[in-house]
Length: 370
Image (tube, rainbow, N blue to C red; front, side, top):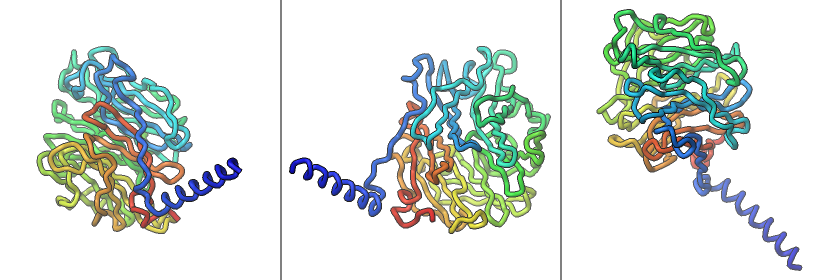
């Protein structure tokens, strides 16, 4: 009799939990999986600037700075490496930390970003480089590629001369961390910042064999992300230091000209954020959906939040808090199972965590994938 009772209790509990999940997505606690923190390697001062993509085979790849002597940025650190972890099960488990870029002491690589060419299945990993012993304050922009879903990588290629101008040699310039995109026509597009000359896009029309910069600067602009809208127009969402909000730039002519305006609904303390396309009707979905993750506070890097737009970024939902504490740079990708993968800098750069979110959680059960 006791056994029968326990079985019935288990069944009732399972049904109740299922109904709770369906009725109240907020009732389930988010699980933060630590991917990079200094407890994993006491010789490292901190891990910063995460980048994440979904590889063509469905694996999740997360790259990040391994900042050895200090948490300082590229121009202040003689030993920054780029390391990576991989998940083959939608972020449930992760591989050990693997070093991808490691120059001799005195030379550093920083600010990884990735871009996946869905046509050729090539993954591009961009980074910024400096030789602090011999060319202090001179930034070089480089890329490596993988043809096997990030298992192995090519030697670095210097693309500085392709995507910058000769007179910019001593300018503070860098490829934006996070990720670039591939347009519907196959063009590879990414963002590059020159703090003296504005934000620029750089592109490839031959699957990364060569790159070129678009001449028209995007002003004002800082660290940014680009998305292609369903009508073929481009939209860049940009950090703006000291403004307390984001700037949005749109182009109807493939970057030849831009319309720029602040978006007071997107609060921001001056921090790198993440915007990606989730679904589009053109690709068979029931709705157009964009996602935006940011530190939702005008003054401090905290309160990481997620928003959704159903009208191509013209308006956004109310912010759904992912983590109320210290939270800075973030990066997103879509998981093979349709969930949203998010990695962000947590608790004043002490940790970098992965969290898996659902559309149902984000919308409080009002929207779900069909």
